[in-house]
Image 1 (spheres, rainbow, N blue to C red):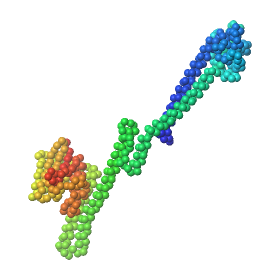
Image 2: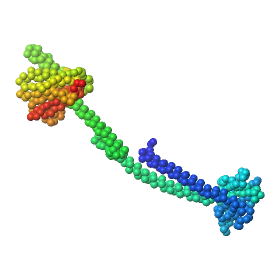
Image 3: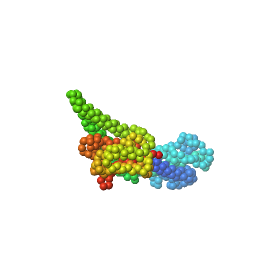
Image 4: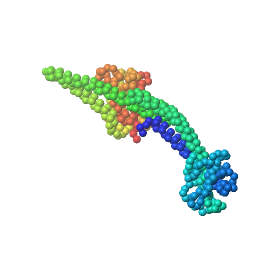
Length: 467
């Protein structure tokens, strides 16, 4: 398991080829051996007459007939195994071979006059093995005739086959190893590219993607899966970075917003300590301003806590709420604050959602108050409530100066104000629309801002209707 994938694949391919060649070679060797030995056995079984003739002297020549291989031995033995006569097949004009079969001391008795089944014995001199059969011969006084054919040619043929198989097998294994190495090298090249890409990604390049990425191959499908995972990781890192950036901006803005009332409270407290009590007017001013700044700071802290709770996913109160009633109350409050402002409400019927009545009133109130603060006093405001496709639609339309495109993208961020002025009279702390977005999202809806036809801003809220 410590080897590389390339090494394990190469060893596996070579081992498979070696096993296949070995099995094929063994089968070929065994088949040829059986065939050649079978031919020798056929000669032994059919050579009884010629062997008897050679021993009885009725055949011309010094040994068995020429159809037997050179070195064939015919022996005539007594029942006790002692030799009576021997004939050896010799090539014409050649010298008789001195090789003899090494027979068992006692041959098994043969109850019939048929030749015994052939068997193999060792030989002497230059012949390693003989194939032997024997039979009792009545015409020769009941003595035993032994016919032995040398296996020299058979063994030479088998030895040549072994050498040929070894050479061919070695060549095939070598060629297979080279070809497998090249194929595996080419096949693993995409994985090497993936490894290099993974190294770059680990170094911090999260936009890097692996190749190949195609559904047609296994490695390509792996590339698709890795790219999908990398996209999710990149999105997660971007989300974390954005969250950290928003958190840092939130802390900085919150610190700025809290510093102002705290500074005012500290200043008026020092005024009282230095002797404002001696002047009733200064004393009343200091106490009033300390109270006002304390209330404003408490409101700011409450708003930040609300946003934090909503971001944490804490559950809100859930009950049927009629948006028509909330919008009607918000329009009445706006008319009381700005009696000269034209404020219209379009709510033809009840639109019931499931949610927190207090928070939803805060949503509508913040949107209407935002329109009152950031538009000219003569600019009309339109509030509309409707229901469509299982969704409640709330819109607050103003006809003021509107929002720049870059402001529309960040308008729902905490402490962000489209008005560059830091005056509290022109826009508060910048948490109103952040609370709107957080409350709407907590209710399973969404809020967006669009440009009003003819100028102005349109805030649209979508909430799921109550079941």
